[in-house]
Image (cartoon, rainbow, N blue to C red; front, side, top):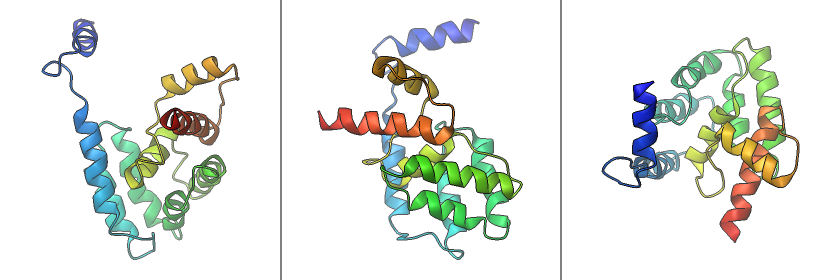
Length: 169
């Protein structure tokens, strides 16, 4: 409980010596730069891409989920799930995530959360894709007067569409 109070105190202090999240933006810039060496995900490049994601995942999503990428790409055609996410656009991201989750489940790896897919997308292109935080998606749903989506792809679509809209303002 004390650690929790200390965390909230530092976070709300507005003192960069106490709380500075600049490293997150730096991480995405660095990761995006490394990933820009890959124009597509193929069976031959997927393990290199996964290594970059694992190396740079910090606290954007659960590290165990990112480690499960290895399980996924070890499955026959599992690399194609990463390719589908890689090729997603802001317009079709909900459907792509839904299909990817169906495939990961079918391949016996289990489903990934919206934050895992968001991490891949934001790492590839932080100008088009936002990181996902469920509490932010819930707040956006409430502000928009819509019911909070249940499916990871729909949750992420709501958050990403809202982020792109706010970015245009």
